[in-house]
Image (tube, rainbow, N blue to C red; front, side, top):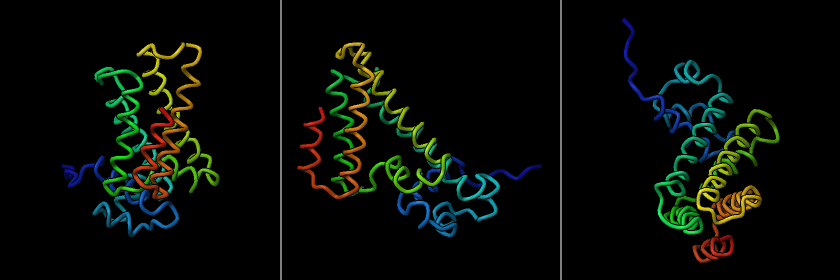
Length: 186
């Protein structure tokens, strides 16, 4: 009879993502990942592959959760115009930064840290950002506030603004600067 797992794989993957998000790929050791997850190296390798495999899975994990979070704030159940929905999403970034979480966007961090070194990392980050852009397109299209011919371009512009805001967050811009950037973007 197989022994039941003493951990939740999703929780372990969240801990791996958090470790990489804090330290980046190179500065995050396997010991850091072991401490973050409470799992030993052998279990981690068996479940997620090598360190690079863990990194790639962490990017995909972030992508799924970030798209879900954005979807909640922008999706059909959300109230208000497209502008109001994007204001909530962008405002959430500012609120998180003001509360002290200055990690920025994992996609941005990954892109700067490793995408130029590894095609798989670049592709994973691009998939995540494309998913965000698609979510932005859906919101704009569903609200009918942008001309159909301009939706893709408008969504790309909003993605640039969103990612730029996340970089400003990571760089430590103050709340007033972040809120001003949101107002200008929207």
